[in-house]
Length: 110
Image (cartoon, rainbow, N blue to C red; front, side, top):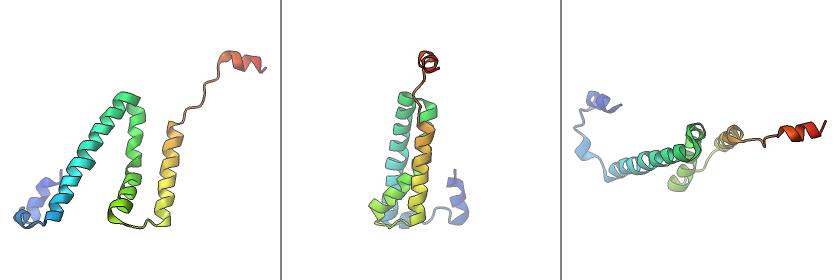
């Protein structure tokens, strides 16, 4: 989607001068973030349904934070950890299913 805008800046003339680390970053994004992410998402849609599988999109910031800690050796701030905890709690709350009450149990307690 943003590919055409690259022509406005340098016209992609600088691509041959990109360092190896830039190409490794692109390969990581293609292989892990895109391909494996989509495959897992579509697997989750087939296994759990679209509504439940869509909850995975809320976990993207949490996964990004975990990758930053593991791969980049970053130290998350307290606010980032609190945000991650809120996200996890929200996804858990949204996917939580209460045990159904059968009409017989409800009538027996009256």
